[in-house]
Picture 1 (cartoon, rainbow, N blue to C red):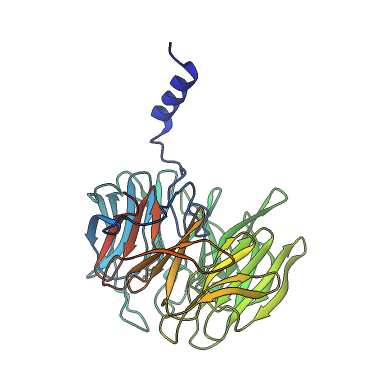
Picture 2 (picture 1 turned 180 degrees about the horizontal axis):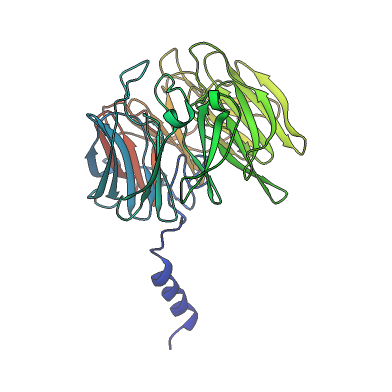
Length: 413
C-alpha cells in the first residue's frame, strides 16, 4: 500500500529540491549561511579516510585571496588573471566551468604582491554579487553570468583603495545590499544599494573602510547592521542607515580591522591585532555598551572567532609575526579556558560538535569542539601551498584556495 505522506514528501523534494534559495548545507557568502563560520546541517566524521580526504577536483586561479561561495551544485570563484578579474561558476561535484564573466582592472596594491580580489562572493535569489579589488561592485545572473548592474565605488564615492584594495564583503538585508565603502570624503563610509537595480538608497558616516565585513543583528522585530570601519564600530538601522550608536575601535598607523564582529545573543565581540585587542559588549535599546576591553587576551589578525556554548573559539596573533595561538575564550569572565600554540595561523569552521582548523600552511586539523580542553581528532596535509583564503564547507565538500588553485575535497568516505 502506498504511504501517501512519504509520497508527498518525495514530490516536494522533486519540486523544490533544486530551488536556488539557500538550503541547509549551502555556503552562499563569507563564513557560511549565517555569516558566523558555522555550517548548517553538516556532519563531520570522527576521522578522515585512511589516505586522507579525497581530492575531487582542482581549478587553476590567478591572484587574490577571495574564498568560494556555494549554492546547490554551483560554486562561485573570484580571482584575477593578468588585467582581468574573473568570476567563474563551476560545478561543485565535478569542478566543470559553467560560465565566466570578466572585469578589466589596473589595480596595484600599496603593500604586498596580491593584486586580486579579496572579498568572498555573495549568492542570493538567482544573483551573484562581487566586490573587486579595483572597487567594482557588481550583480550578475547566477545562471548565465550576465552583468545586471555594476558600480565603481572608488570613483563614485571618492573612496581610497586602502593597503590591499577593497576587501569588505557586502551584506544583504531584505532589498538592500550594504557595503563598507569608505567614502569618507562624500559621507559615504557605508552605502546601501537596491540589490536589484543598483540604485543608491542611503549612505552614512565619513569613515574609511576596513577589511571587516558587516553582520545583521535583529531585535524587537527591527533589523540593524553592526559594522567595524577603519577606526569606529557602528550600529546602524538597516533600512535607513541611521547611526544608532558607535564606539571607537581601531588604531592609527599601519593597522587593519579584518575580523568580522561576532554576535552571541545580544552580546558582541570585536577583535584585531596590531595593538588593538578585543572589545566585548552588549547591544541594548540605547546602543552599544562595552563590558570589557583588553589588548592581550585575544587579538585576531583576520580570523573571525566562532561562538559555541557561551564560549568563543578564536585565533590570537598574526600570521606574519610571532606564534599564533588557537584558544577557547569565556568572554563573560573574561578568561582563556585553554590554548594551543605551535599550530600556526588558521581560519575556522564549526560543524556540529567538530571544528575545522585550516592552517595557512595547507594542513587541516579536525578537532572536537570541546570548551574544556584542546582535543585533536585527525590531521591531513591538503596542499603545500599557502591557504590564506577563507575555506567553504557544503554537503561534505570542503573547498580551499592556495597560491595556484582551488581544491575541492570530500572529508568523509
